[in-house]
Image (cartoon, rainbow, N blue to C red):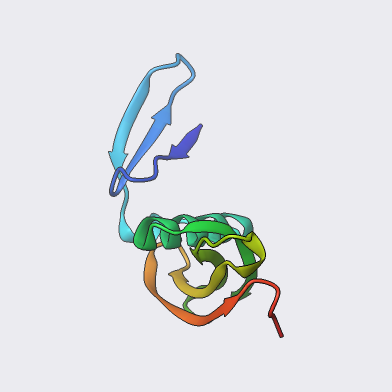
Length: 115
């Protein structure tokens, strides 16, 4: 059985039938593409880590030639009442393995004043 350990660089952990764990380094070609759901979670995690803002959720996910484009909505500024919070919409670009290629804020708007 094999399990990729995120954050361990290029190491992969293998468990043999005796239960022993062996770590091996992957070749670049051994990287597996992430699913849409995994890409969405990773895009959300990256925006929160980079901006420090409170996430509201993933608003879109789209496959690209190089990987994934994910839309993430966050609270830019909490206000009272909450209906006047400022929200931001970020676009995250990930490669096929879920690594961050780039991100940018595409929109900033007041909650309740959407399209």
